[in-house]
Length: 150
Image 1: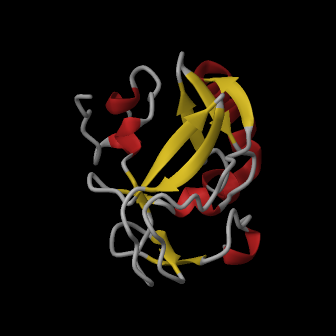
Image 2: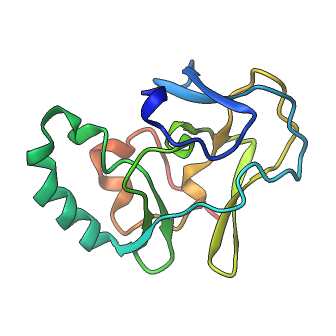
Image 3: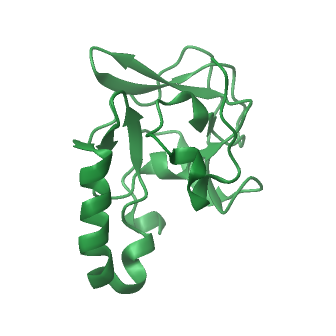
């Protein structure tokens, strides 16, 4: 898993997480305002295009189908910024009290530290703050999330 994950920035590593499965942990202190990753790459697809690709390709991937189709960022208008391979981003777990946020500047997404993060602390995001696709909160894999009022 660690060998097949693209690192997005130095100063972090994947470990077992008390939050869920695996998580991304700080190898050093990070200060509020730092930008660990100044660009989240990917391909822009509609949510419908993404679902169709998943339906067509997943059966041929066998047991690896759960490894793919797991990493994306929601964009306005039911669009997704999808990545065809795992990066550190997919190991950042959800928290309603996150220490990171996604910032958008001219359509470019980055990760920004919103409060100091200590060495060995897990990086977290509030997934609910993305413009999630329609119906997302009704899907089986979103049961641990509740919509947030902005």
